[in-house]
Amino acid sequence: LYKDNPNHLIIASGGEGQLKNVLPTKITLAGVIKEELIQIGIPAGNIIKEEKSGNTYQQLKDLQKMLKNRSFHGVVIISNRYHLPRLRAMIKYADDLRPLKKLLSLSRLKIKSAEDIVIKYKPKIWRKFIEKAYKSEAMKKRVASEKRGVRQIKDGTYKFN
Image (cartoon, rainbow, N blue to C red; front, side, top):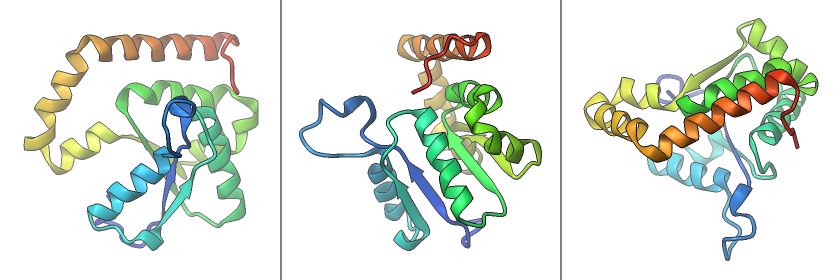
């Protein structure tokens, strides 16, 4: 996507998350993402790291703060396909994410599947790999967990933190 729009700024988001007390060094999701993006040719100066968040909700809150402090014309959130319904539910139902909800309603915020993007650009490499992954037991459990999260968000029992 960046190569189609090289003037875009990328925000790599994610802190230590669930591995906070497991890893011997401070490795963040944002740091890993930034390094991978640099390896595929995206200039480091076009990538901002947000490394404080420990979960999706915190990432959305931090993104919202960043958007408030800068003038962005449009934003695209990219995440795994299985994760998008919960991400959308958070934006729709969490009161403190109203600015993101407004951007989404104005089509200034888009949410895209990482799987769909890589399949679009490199279908021979990724299509079968992703199909196989989604058929695995681990992925089926993950999808079920995400669906539970969406139900909890909608019924007001989800623990945002």
